[in-house]
Length: 199
Image (tube, rainbow, N blue to C red):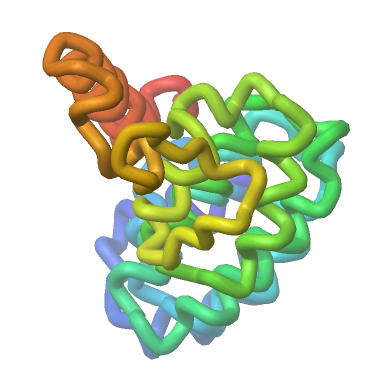
């Protein structure tokens, strides 16, 4: 259970090489806190985390693992592709997952600028899922992900005045609407970054 984590915390073991050697002791245990241990382990921790987070019976600790995967990707840029693959695997089952869990995955993929995930994320938006409301419309998500806006895409709203995507045409929305939208976007980012609902 939690004994390996308790021992690590008491011994203050944080050296990556030592942590890798201790991985077999973790079994199916995930700590309630101090996920920085997994970040310190880096790539060798990914198979363990993948098996855990892809198991729907793991319940409430799965969002914590997604957050940990995001932190590993940030700390170890060479793992981003592997982390994104894990997240895409999870998102394939979006229709059977909690909307907050999906939102966390979709947000992380956007921050990683993982354009290979866009066809899958598009399906989430097409399904009109509640989680997409955190990101505005499809065009706003594409901008967040650093992807180009295709004017031929029927999911991208176009401005009738300037023939530009509405998302980059403030004149269409009006100053007040833009301010409201920006505040909403900031709130969504703070919600996802804080991860308070994961505890």
